[in-house]
Amino acid sequence: MTGNLTVIGLGPGNPDQTTPEARAAIEAASEFFGYGPYLDRLALAPDKKRHASDNREELARARAALEMAASGRSVAVVSGGDAGVFAMAAAICEAIEQGPATWREIDFSVVPGITAMLAVAARAGAPLGHDFCAISLSDNLKPWEVIEARLRAASGAGFVLAFYNPISRARPWQLGRAFEILRETLPEATPVIFGRAVGRTDERMAVATLGDARPDQADMATCVIVGSAETRVIVRKGRAPLVYSPRSTGRPAR
Ligand code: SAH
Image (cartoon, rainbow, N blue to C red; front, side, top):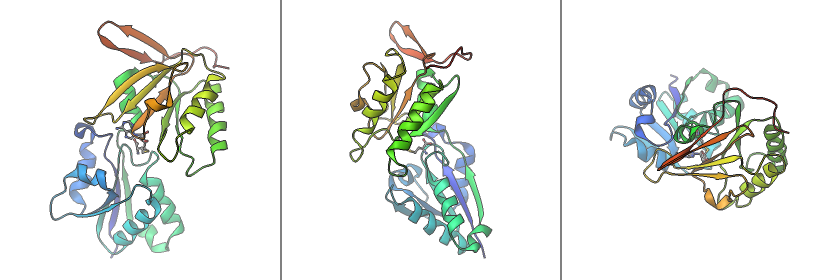
């Protein structure tokens, strides 16, 4: 008997930003895999079984979940934000591709969630109002040279950039280097948004310019959005500034 496996995006942290579809999928599953703090957020009923793991064991976790689904169980794998954005859905697809043929018979589905950059952008105004791209600054799964090439290409083409995994204790210099590269082509006044733990009780928002942005304004719970040359800031009395990228654009930044 073959069971089912659903990968569920829980949203950035605010329970109101977990979709009804995700809630229904949580209700339907009986075995839960994921990073411990995400499982804690679910407050699971006692008849549901937790398989908590470290955030870095993604492929091993994917295989364990697939094995359990193949044995006939109803399995959920949870991710923060969206399950397909730098998260477990891709790890599970990798495991299915490499794994035994029986894993392809598992009833597999992905339930989307609100990804961090959308939650951060909504807090700041509309910085993703025109073309943008998302880049993970982690060089655990790709060489740093690839990241540098992508930063140059994307900023040179006029995209707004959303950085995931901007900095950590093991990766302390990458964000500073990314700012240096962007300063070569983008104006100093380009807005930089630091959105930390958005939707959670320890949320913190800050807006800087590329000229004065510092890597220590971010931590591993921060999504950093760097504007394009077109991105604007509206200063408001007694309120946080509004950052937005107009819907129309002229020439790409060079
Ligand atoms: N699947 C997740 C991303 C996982 S990668 C999603 O779609 O959001 C982990 C990175 O996501 C963190 O380093 C941070 O850059 C970002 N992130 C996750 N939750 C966040 C939140 N609540 N606020 C700001 N950034 C967040």
